[in-house]
Image (cartoon, rainbow, N blue to C red; front, side):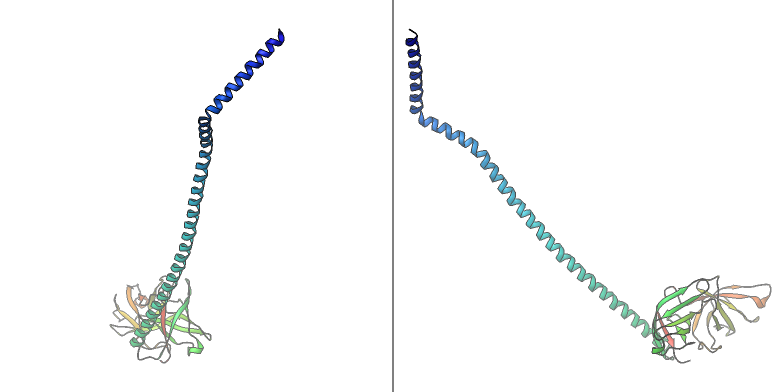
Length: 271
């Protein structure tokens, strides 16, 4: 009996398997579509991802290409800017040279009665006690000690030492400077000295008791003393100080030359 039951179960299983196979083969077309759909659902996201990645990489390549182009353009602009700056500096140098030449020409015309040597200031030694300048001409240019130095506005000073290529000038506002002068109104002789109290002025001393010196008087070299030729403008009387003793009165003379801005000078060769 047991064998009969076992054989019956096996028969049922075989029957079920056969039925399943029949269903599978009879619906093969539908199953094929199912597997295709499953494969498509699996493959498509991967394909889409690869496509996106490709496009992204392609965009990055374009980005890096643009960056390289920008760098190249930036370098070209830098080079162009450097060239423009160089041209600007050259134009500024030409402008300065033209201005210097124009100033020399004006000076030469103004002081045409003198034989002069043009130069410009290369150093200034300005302190409370010493006010000297150094100019770019020396022995090789014919400059010697005690030669008079002038500028467009008037007297600068005189040469106190020279080298082959430079000369040191003691300015009229130096405390050790002393210039024989005369007043434009009275023609009286006075002496103008540099002073510690005034940065760009001189102290007019030894004013004759009978002289009527007033504010605004023009002061020029008198030609006495053997250094400065006569008639070179020095400055203008800014203030007159009277004292109890008239022989001690003095005046402050504002120098005509602006020594802070002094650049171009002429050295007078002949007196």
